[in-house]
Amino acid sequence: MLTTEQQAHFATFGFIVLRQAFSPAEMETISHAFEDVLTADRQGRAFEGVKRQAVLGFIEKRPLLTHLVEDDRIYEPLEQLLGPGFVWIGSDGNLYVGDTNWHPDGSNLGYRRIKVAFYLDPVTKESGCLRVIPASHQPPLHEELKPLLERRADLTAAPFAVLPRDLPCFPLESQPGDVVFFDQNLWHAAFGGRTGRRMFTLNFGAKPTDASHIDYLQRVYQSNLKHVEQMQYTQNSRVYEDAFLYSDRPRIQSMVGKLVELGFK
Image (cartoon, rainbow, N blue to C red; front, top):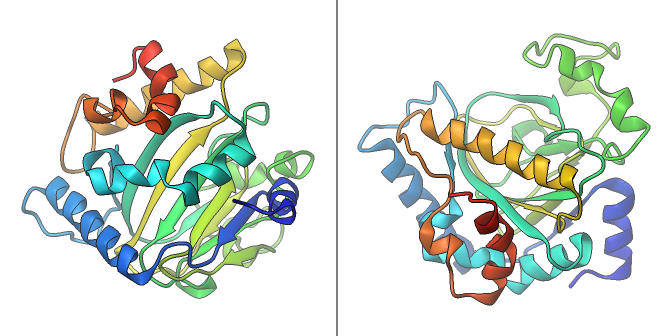
């Protein structure tokens, strides 16, 4: 459970880090499952380090990983931050290559979404940790940073008179076992990480209460479906696994019920 002060930190700054929420033994087991999923995706090929490997529907592929979404250390903070009835959006497992320039995960300020990130290797400001711009998940700062998107692919562009890696920010340095929660409207980036750095995320949205929220979920689903159909290695025509969508676990049922109702698969 988050304290009142931690909840205030998230509301004000858009992120919170739970230090050593998972033990070294748990992280070793999680890391083995991570490697298993990404190795299976490559179908016997080596990771060449030229292009990021991203596997959508990541945690849904192994029961050990699936249970993370109902773990008290994940579920209870999410219920505090998003409210009851929050929904599942999806997950991804990644081997990263190169820098990730500044961006939010969409700019829908009217619908609350949270990303939960696990880093499987130590990361610092200079070695690829998540950098965030505090309070950029809300106006007016969120909109004032949009010039960064106009040349996102250009790491030498300087719309604010400094290079992207020198933009004022807060580095969320972490060790395996730490869990990062951040608002998906928060501007974030990563610079200087080694090729093949490992990270996976879980993504959630507040209970949808109007048509715009449903429209958002449908657009994200269609985008994810297109991605899994064009993945670098394994192509697929499904975003989710039946075992996950039709789980008999109450917490999972509560967060996927809307997806099933909408016909997502």
